Length: 253
Image (tube, rainbow, N blue to C red; front, top):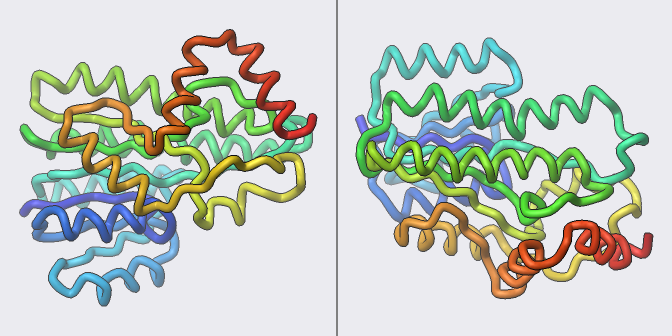
């Protein structure tokens, strides 16, 4: 049984990955993972030609990861595509944020990616693809998005190193690093006016179209948009204290 596994599939980028992958490849099943089962079940009418298996799991909980491991062991599928798109962010000063919420962010944005990838890899074959949803904030320290940015820096390093390790197996791993994307992410991330400057928003469709093309080209990082690629280049050329100073001036801090 050939399947795709997509986390964070109930909304935003994860949901768009489900819709796009169903049109790009033929799967016997798509295992879609998130906490909101009703949202996952709503995907099936949109994809009548694809069998959707909704898995209502909270990937920050050990029992959810164990349930996923047990399902893989019982069914022994071939996982052709893994998309790690779970996660959330919070904007604001580090001191003002709730500690439990920050630790939960680290669990979902990083620990869940590591766990899902490690559990899934034994069921992947040559030609398998791993998409890790990342962020432009991975390339530089970002004040006032401090913890979220750090979690994404981890994902970038993890994904690029893993891509090298997996070359001998013919499996590709790519970090998808968009700029601002207008999704439900912002409903949770923005709670005050700390961050006020957003230079440009992309759509999930734009970001994922680019990611699918970049995976076919064998890239280990996908960056959507010329302006975002220019920002990435600047983070490599300019000292990070200067980059952070420019960011703070943009936010009028």
